[in-house]
Amino acid sequence: MPRLDDFAILFDASYCIGCRACQVGCKQWNDLPATETQNRGSYDSSYLSAHTWLKMSYHEGLDKDGEVYWDFTRTSCMHCSEAACVEACPTGAMNYRPGGVVTVDQDWCIGCRNCVQACPYDAVHFDEQKGVVQKCTFCHDRIANGLAPACVKACPTGALRFGTYGAMRRAAWERVEALKAEGYTEANVYGLKEMGGTHVIYVLLRHPSTYGLPIEPMTQRHKVAVDWLSAGIAAAALGTLGWVIARREEVSGGES
Amino acid sequence: MTGGEWGIYIVLYFWLAGFGGGAFLLALSQRDRWLQRVGAWLAFLGVVVGALLLVIDLGQPLRFWHLLASFRPVSVMWLGSAFLFLDGIALFLLLFLRQWPPLLVWAAAILTLLVVGYTGVLLTATARPFWAASPLIPWIFLASAGTTGAAVLALFGAEAGVHRAAFWLAWVEGALILLHLVWTYPSATPAVQALLSGSLAWAFWGFVAFGFGIPIWLEARKKGLWLAALLVLAGGFLLRYFVVYAGQVGYLI
Image (cartoon, rainbow over all chains, first blue to last red):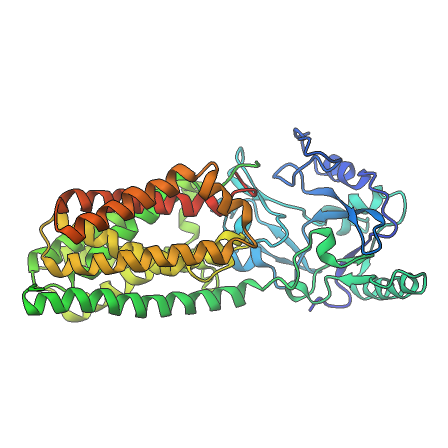
């Protein structure tokens, strides 16, 4: 669980107009170069990459009543409390910093990309020029000096807010209550339980899957335990089968 | 799309470690001392060449020692590198010694099994649905280590027992792959489609025909066993290839 005085960002989908000011603000503050976009038949034309640490995702479809919806989410590192990237990292280069921020030590990262494969939010990417991975830093260089992260600073509608975890979580709950009173019965908070609690929390109008968010993602620790168990059973079962057949034939002299 | 995928070096490493380790473990079930020594050599070469491939694949190859300067057992990548390192030492000692101390043989066998096994766990413990949605990748990799290991031992003149083991493990391997595709189809549809009819179909169907179908047919008729062994080895490479690449379809490739 995040501590109440940790840093947190609140993204409120009900206020977001999809202007991408956060995306541009992130690029500018972090000195990230422009990247080629690709027309995929919607406004959602960018990808998260080593040079794009934050992007707006656009989700459109028909709701239960046949009404068209077009919703936006801020897609970036969630700064998890039990982060898959940190637990997958073999050197400790990817690690938790004070305030719940997850960053990668660029001088210690070896570029194995295990974190890239492990992140359920697709927020870590490999920089081929630098040979290390890159991701959102929560603008630690800004927040350590009392400033809001660049994305929050750039947001013109108040869809992004920055503060302590306790304050942001309270604001999220209050906002969901207000939305429910307005008739958005599916309004919910995302990020309170996922991956041990994330330091970026979302207020959503619809079910998280509508926004392409992973539902109840398994922590890396849990996954690794289950998968070692599976491998152990596999080794016992297949090993016994292969070894016994090979051995039996050898003992019996191979007549069959 | 954004680069940095696990590519051909990883595929080659999985393949080398798989058939080298499989050959060593299967050879231990045989009385033939010479075959056991061949198995140890194959496993040792797989570990050493494989480790070199892994280092080359790093974004910062010269920092590989950071792995040894850390202790992160939850990370499958860290554990795997530790197993690889220790297995290399154990196998080197075996090759060096005329008489094999039973304890060392056991240590080398267990470490080799861990090296072969962790590669599957590494893929399964990710957020990529084609690898992670079923727990079967370690099963498939272990079965393939058995068939390819048996194939390479067959080339070195292994007896009927190794052939029988390979024959039955091949059927299990085929069934596991089929089960895995069905299991992961709902959550990893683009990956499975890439295998069946898309960009990876050549590797998948190449494996089905040349790495599975024809060798099983030859083995059942006890004809062309040398060819069957070569095909199984090549098929093992195709298997690692399509598994590694399919997991990243829609994410990194």
